[in-house]
Image 1 (cartoon, helix red, strand yellow):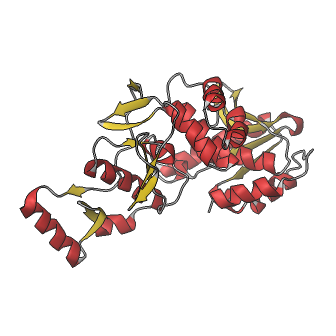
Image 2 (spheres, rainbow, N blue to C red; image 1 turned 180 degrees about the vertical axis):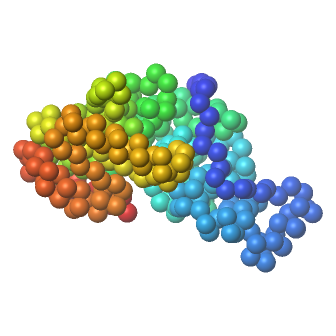
Image 3 (cartoon, one colour; image 1 turned 135 degrees about the horizontal axis):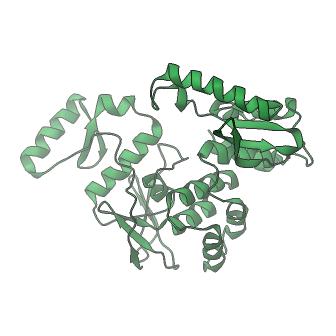
Amino acid sequence: MPNSTLAPGLAPTPIELMRSHGAANTTVLDRAWRRGDLVRVVPGVYAPVAQWEASAPWDRYLARVHAVNLAHPGFVFCGATAAALRGVFLGRQSDPVLILDPDRTSRVSGVVRVLTSADRRTIDEIDGIRLTSGADTAVDVARASSPGAGLAYADALIRRTPRLSTAQLRAINETRLSSRNRRRARWALDRASGVPESVLESLSLAAMEFAGFELPKTQVTFLIDGAEDCVDFFWRSRDLIGEADGAVKYAGELGDPTKAILEEKRREARLLRRASRRIRWGWPELRELDPLIDILRTARVPRPLPADPFLLASLRDALH
């Protein structure tokens, strides 16, 4: 497997990890674990129980990946695990940590699942961690995921990987020796662009298509009174703006939330001078799907095609 390097760093562990070193240290950590002060993430690697329990499921998964790397340096991470290290994960906390080893038989051991493949993959080494390249990771995940999730992963990995193109991803998918799930991956890789700025936006586009709605333009910029306002979606046929909000701008991560709210009101006033209407939704509406469909239907977004129940069901499963 050829090696390469990438400039961007990987997602660090979101939870403090402690590794046993020597008999004395191992005894101290083991006693703390038995008292209930620590969680044993993987054999030989622990985390504070309070911090672990307060963390989101995706943070626990990422911490488990880093714990496996501490316990087994040199493992090559792949699939959704490599994507998690690159900052995007749509799986569940209980999902196995995926490693690639072409010379071993596929098997599961504890939290680790060993995968094999006859296809050559480029391996990156970043921050001392080895993982499949952004391109190989995107194709692997698109083959293993539902179509909507595959699109979200591909968009996110394109955004995070310098010089990665959709043409490159499609070529890798078509030249893989195994034809298994090739067709499934085509749906996501044919639509991936890296233009949507969040997983929420990519999944929203998938939901719109699965439900039969007309697809909007993405990341459209309006110049109004010298200010540039970029919107997530714009349906020119209905003069309608759509925005998928993750609520970050109001939570304080981007500064004073009061100031952010005032600026958003000014932005909304400018946009409504350019478009006749504006609709918004977030993760709750997307996860349930029906509320998002109702928002689009009420806004009279054109719906030229019938809904695809199978694809909608696959998206529901990926979101829960």
